[in-house]
Length: 296
Image (tube, rainbow, N blue to C red; front, top):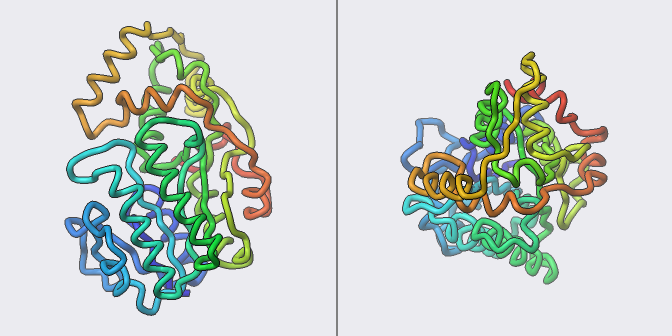
């Protein structure tokens, strides 16, 4: 099929593009105008501004399916979170309904239900709109909600790997108690390939966690062990310093640690992998094997 993939040069999008190409599809990769190259199948798009269906309809000519892999952790003037997570995806989904592109695979996130963060609320809004289009019979969407996605090139993955190298680690309290279910970026890409092939009929919300949950502190400890290091001394960062460090992170847009991240750590990010594993045809990669299989 001819597939429009938004965010094709991002961490998840790059892996998905490679997997779809290996499966025999033709990937039309959406890229930021400032990242545009001479590659003929790359399509410039601006998720901060392309907030109407008319902006998307010309890009859907000849397209059989759409995969939306665009996302941001935090708000910025260049990539406003309301536009990137909600307004532009909604415009894209509406354009798909108008153009007759019925198959949409949308990458959302696990743990957004009940969260009051802007990250969660904007993600939920796009999911709800896509579900409403499906209820009207306008689209056949699959909405993927992965837990923490691990792999080479991911900002959060790099942060975890750097923490894992420290002999003495100061962790914010929520990192020692919040449960995550890390998933390999390659497994997520494999599920998307299935949804655009043998599992084309699968629709709705699909949780995409790894096979086992653990606290984030234990996950970092596992990453340390996988790199051949001995156990580290783990200390709890006092709550006042945790809040201060998060506010300091707010002033540095390029880092993943900020008050929004701290708020999201307050709830578990775990789920049921049953449907995800059906798509894979196997168990997902266990967190204890992620360095060997996904950090490449």
